[in-house]
Amino acid sequence: MHLNLSPGAVTVLEKRYLKKDQSGRVIETPEEMFRRVARNIAEAENLYGKDSSRYEEAFFGIMSSLEFLPNSPTLMNAGRRLQQLAACFVLPVEDSLDSIFESVKETAIIHQSGGGTGFSFSRLRPSNDIVGSTGGVASGPVSFMRVFNAATEAIRQGGTRRGANMGILRVDHPDIMAFITAKEDPREFVNFNLSVAVTDPFMGAVEKGEDYELINPRTGKASGSLKARETFDKIVESAWKSGEPGVLFIDRINRANPTPHLGEFEATNPCGEQPLLSYEPCNLGSINLAGFVERDGARKIDYGRLGETVRLGVRFLDNVIDMSRYPTENIDRLAKGNRKVGLGVMGFADLLVRLRVRYGSSESFSLAEEVMGFISRFAWDESRRLAAERGPFPNIKGSVFDRPGVPPVRNATTTTVAPTGTLSIIAGCSSGIEPFYSLSYTRQVLNGLNIPELNPLVSEVAVEEGFFSPDLIEYIKNGGEIKDRPDVPDKAKEIFTTAFDIGTEEHIRMQAAFQKHTDNAVSKTINLPPGATKEDVKKAYLLAYKSGCKGVTVYRSGTRAEQVLTCKSPLYC
Image (tube, rainbow, N blue to C red; front, side):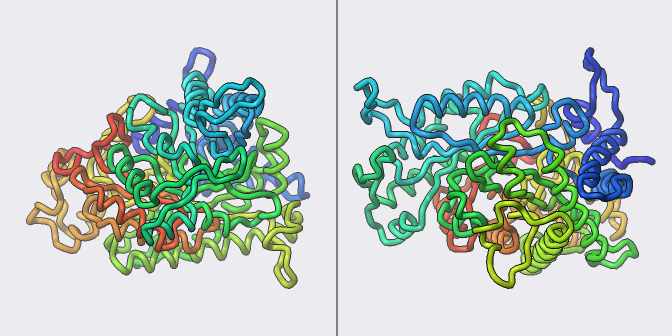
């Protein structure tokens, strides 16, 4: 068979995913990679008395057609020595040196196997607090974060990617101001994303212009107060300057906790879309929506094929839980106890173009709800089927599913919308639910390797709508704006809208539309042009809170020396 892979996809696969011999020579084709993964994941069927060969073919089919891809560690490690298949983990950081350095050790093991880690540093006593054992003073969460950052720098994830971390601090921690400004020096915390866990009472205090209490986690008692608006404005200013910190609405996240009897959420994975309990992992997979437009030329979604792919995707991810070799016993226990999976989407912007719908229009928000609602229904239906076939997740007793009349489910969660950075390169589609960043851009991957890309849908639509010319393609490839071309119909200009053409409100509304039908959370960057103001950032954070989002990340273009996407138009980059 012939895989439809772009040059960029082949480059990424050869650098990171395909097997190599001891001299570093690639000894596996992309097709063989998909076969390796399909065969390995289908082996889980044998545990439940099913025919693994049947599912091997089904799994191979959805991956090789690029209609579904699991997270990177599964593609890299399934059927190989490591066999660590989960993408993300949360580790606890308790207020003792033993706990801190145990977590540093476990972080190194996870990063070496290709996983990312999230931490809440909110339990650590604040700087200058007493240390009972020595009579000295504590150095505080930010100083210990440097230890984790340095450990990550020393470990390159199995030689395949740099480790990624999420560092979180509650807004009521006494060291919150130092945390908020921690990344204003671009040399600090280069291996961390940072987010502030903001509470509902804090957001209420922001609205009313009130003070709020800071709580010393060592004593659980108030240790001063701050003006809520001043703290909020500091978060906004720092995000405007550097893109960080993001914000997590921690109370809203915990209201959606399916297993509150096992503990509260304090942290998420590195991109913020997967809240997890301490020691909990999650494995993710994404459906490429670009491939689900009816093949008979009608501009509508092929829900028949999409439903089948959702079912296979959930089954695949449930199998991954059994096939994965976890870094520690605690992680193994929670992985198999809660059986969380996160099926999401990529290629949404491509889908809209093929349906001739403008990203950011009211029709696009309706489609987002419709598509994610459909995926959620089928994902849960498949989880119920798997529960009937294999049994419910072991920790279901005491969970939100432990109620009369509620049928048992196999998985504590089924859906997550991840950013799909490298997966979307392999699949040749737009990433996650993001709009196009630009129609021609350079994508930085793999420690400085730059891949120039031109959106292939420009040629596709130009041919279908009768305005194709080599001159047009060359013009866009060189950074020209499609909206400046008189030979392009207005409708085509409209559907090729890019990230900076879309207002802050439209970005947030899209995230909220997907969140409505997503169990975990939604990764979405609110991309702003260089000229965006602090008010624009503030508006995004407040609107995200009011719209039901679980968190928000804002990035003003040009505020980091290294950014993943760079477009050629000087107007925006």
